Image (cartoon, rainbow, N blue to C red):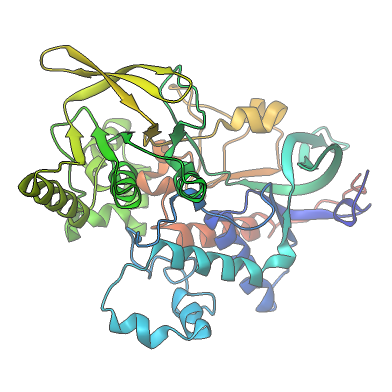
Length: 445
């Protein structure tokens, strides 16, 4: 069953799969290009959610961003853009109030509202409730792959599919929650991606929480420990991690240069052993680390409770969870103290996995099209500097990736730091590849 989006003759120049911050930035870059009167780029972006949403489960009221507001959707590409965070503040009537805070780091909820504001301005380029289920290569009369047919469905009616044809596609489906092997999620066992709505449900229902465990040592873990401790004021909240203590994030000026746009060029051109070294040296800027302010606040809370003789906040360090058994009204969680091997069974009401995210497997999404992607000696997808995947001979259609390219482009692959610049690079690559003679194409399905 077709919709106007798949009407005969429609062939998009680029089709985005996913409409989070990365493809939103690309949509804005395209919209601004089209408004400038150059050769028009016909684009559409598909998103399975019913509306724009970005890590909604971790929008804790007072949680702040870990990157400067200047690393928004556009400023690093075009400081004069009307889609900047500062333009958003001006429209919301908070520009002066924000400046008076003297901070570079907005509330996470505020930055989410900024994203939603920007997404609303390019709403005509987005198709929500469009879950992509297949990407099929389409060949021309000469046998070359000239287009991709992207098949999507409305989650409310899986039997109804829509086909859209495009010369290029840009995959930006984000990360998916990761939990340890064998983990069974339930009403008592969550991933932090569900934290805020799950806590709200328990609070609204008045469900008692006597003990909650949080597994993990990164920013999300520390935020979850803090949020649960402040929300459930009679509960014991335990952080469980293999480290001796939380590691502070390295946000020092020189280390932060690993997130500069120029650092992507350095990383991309480096030999494999240098890439590995850079990644290992600078993991502490992003992975399994916590803002120092939050570390100090949690320590102060633990010390204050020790002074008053009621210790609700506990850090089970150098420890791992070895077993989880769900009973009718509680969990039995076995925690091992690694230096001695001693195991303790704790009765708990909640176990929250702050165990991070992983890139989604593009092979599952792309199906037959994935077989056209060239891979390196480590079986990783080969990606050019312009974020375009190297394809088999005879494939003229382009496949761009936003995310899942740490092995080629470095730590910023899935981060906001270079989102604006990357969007401009992809837009310019699409234009450059169209600069040659255009191919006469048959009607789309």
